[in-house]
Image (cartoon, rainbow, N blue to C red; front, side, top):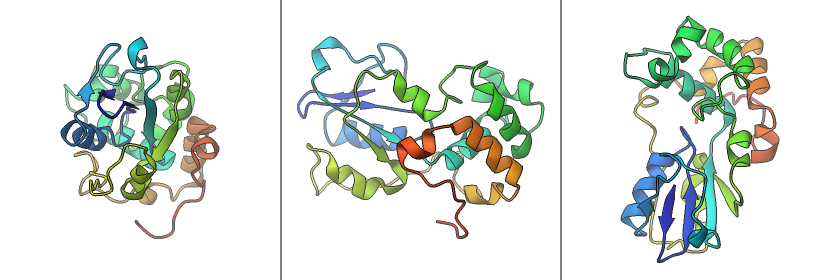
Length: 202
């Protein structure tokens, strides 16, 4: 969570959805500070800031699932998210297809935010004035009431996504598509994303 006292905003972060990009610009250009009252990606806004403009960012559920797989299972190392939360031990494979199958049934058994669908994560936030698509962040931020048009921001891919194939290449199998849709649930409709897999990379 980033809180900006001067510009009266609260940014509720979500893992793998552009939080590092937003943290950087909100702290360096808008004087925000990182509030960790209920965790690194906290959702409980302190009483004195509850009237501030509150917003967050979201990510295409298909893309998010691939990113979660990369950081928890693919090429997992002893100190990675996968080892820390036991995801690798439960999936027992570094194949995305196997991960997607496990993910479709894992939500109720594993509540940590790293695999929690976005609609459930946002459910824990008392109020959100808007949720921005991280894929369109350059334009989306202009809707924020405090945003200065001279401040530019671009979606910086997390180091686990850089140099990797586009997420759409992992969805050639219809079963994988179905499993991720089961996991994401209402995310597509509530957050305004299409269930169609793009035919070209972007």
